[in-house]
Image 1 (cartoon, helix red, strand yellow):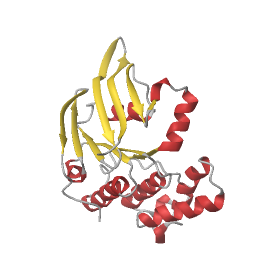
Image 2 (image 1 turned 120 degrees about the vertical axis):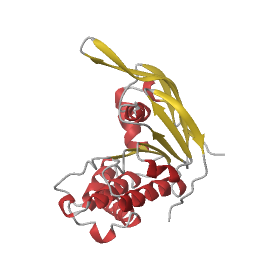
Image 3 (image 1 turned 120 degrees about the horizontal axis):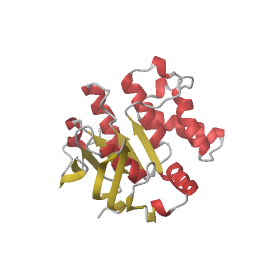
Image 4 (image 1 turned 180 degrees about the vertical axis):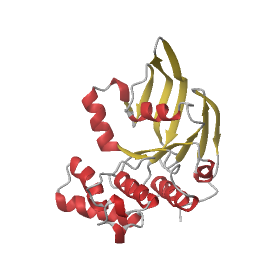
Length: 236
């Protein structure tokens, strides 16, 4: 049986707009397991990105509790939450978030240096991560020489090089064509299957469902459907 990686209860978040408030998360219950891909799906504005931010320590909920890797995330001081993310979490975003002046290899190395690896160890691990995502021959290229799919694979290499126990992906395929979307999603699948990470992916892209162990639908700040399934497409 898979080990629970995150368990959240009663998550509530609202944002103020002028004199009124918009409720974005409405008492959500959530859990996910190591070695599995959990897709959180829903239309724009449904609350899925706010949910992933609350689960990963990026946005404090107004109410509720998040148990992440056995620790009560939001009871930690801010500095410890930052350290928790550095040590345990990988992030992949729609916009890639790459530094224009750095090569693919340097993009990955810089994160590993923040973790305390020396230059040689960081280079070795970064090279291995880029080889894993199929970018070995392109590791000395800067972002302006890479396609959209290659940029996203750099972002994935940067995330998996940390050996994260929790991997969060926010709309990782929405800027990609079908072929590159499949490549990226297979890499997320491998992060769960081969690295044992708990992969939490929020998306409105229906192409991703085939890779998931579990599909959760969220709408208007509430979970409307939660289905476990056998992935029809495995990493290749």
